[in-house]
Image 1: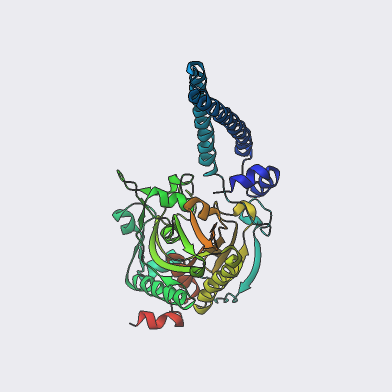
Image 2: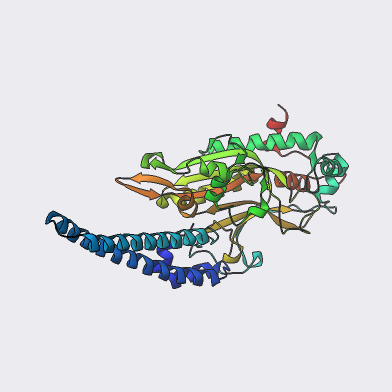
Amino acid sequence: MIDLKYLEKNFDEASAKLAKKGVDLTILDELKVQFAMLKEAKQSFEDKRAMQKSLSKEFGAYKAQGKDITELKYKLDKLKEAATLLEQKANSIEDELAKKALVIPNFPYDVVPNGESEDDNIEIKKILTPQEFNFTPKEHWELAEINSWIDFTRGVKLAKSRFALLQNRAAKLERALINFFLDKNTKAGFNEVSPPILNNSKMLQGTGQLPKFEDDLFKIEGEDLYLIPTAEVPLTNIFNDEILQDSELPVLLTAATPCFRKEAGSAGRDTRGIIRQHQFDKVEMVAIVKPEQSDEIFEMMVKNASDILTELGLPHRLVELCGGDLGFSAARTIDLEVWLPGQNQYREISSVSIMSDFQARRAKIRYKDGKKNLLTHTLNGSALAVGRTIVAIMENYQQEDGTIETPEALKPYLNR
């Protein structure tokens, strides 16, 4: 959640930051009006309280002197009643402000480039050179059929569209990649955990999926439980409403989980193959850090995801996201895009983001700095999305006859 005190005191500056993300500033104008109403209500409440305290002293003096207190008591009761109503009004305005703040995205960092869409993102660098094929490379769904790796028809039969059945070598490859990713992440300093994949609404509000993105979530009927869209949710919220010790930070966590997304509003995009599925596996990195540790950990997480792709021999590039393409909770994001020769383009396979104190404020994740309790920063990123890595391996390691070779780094995992 954005810092409402900062917004109130620096309204024009905050508005400019949010405009960089393409936010409709109408809601900010509404908040500005409510800030004024809250200020007035609080001042009126304080004035009534002051009058009440003054009259209470007079009331006490009258009573001690045995004077008639009937009229004074009537006035005091009326002041109490008025003060209570003003306090309730102020609390109601504050609650409304907090509710509206939940749907306002995080402020982008100054380093985030201006832009409206992914077309305005900035390439940082390319890693590894895509190979040149002496034949026309096939797309992964063609290769899946040739090798009997993915059964799209039966996946739909078992569930519905955008579900797939991985089988044979692809099923083994999925398991191998999960183990490979977890091993690389733990070697980089992340502690492995296995969290619940059902989380309650408080947790999803903590990381920013609720209330704004409820239409993208799969909810359990009759329960305050949702299938997680990413392990970012449980990993970050392990520390929901907790105070960590300064010495405990940074906390680095990794987990492999299935992820579930309705992909509302994305009809027509990547409907063929397994690029965009309702269910997919992903290995996530999450960091809970002190603000001064944030940038260094961010660079480490980007490098770790990139190193994994490099070890797999997969050409990729790093891309700085512009303001208009930045996620709701993110203050800064670098995407890793892997080269897919069948599609003849780079496609996102990981996003590594700094959330600043946005999620920590929503989830009340703090740390003790001396006598003060301060908000942490949170970061997250994929290392990596398993299905998209399988796609990348299929297309980059395909042979002219349609068979698919295995990356050297995965052979020990597949031969167990």
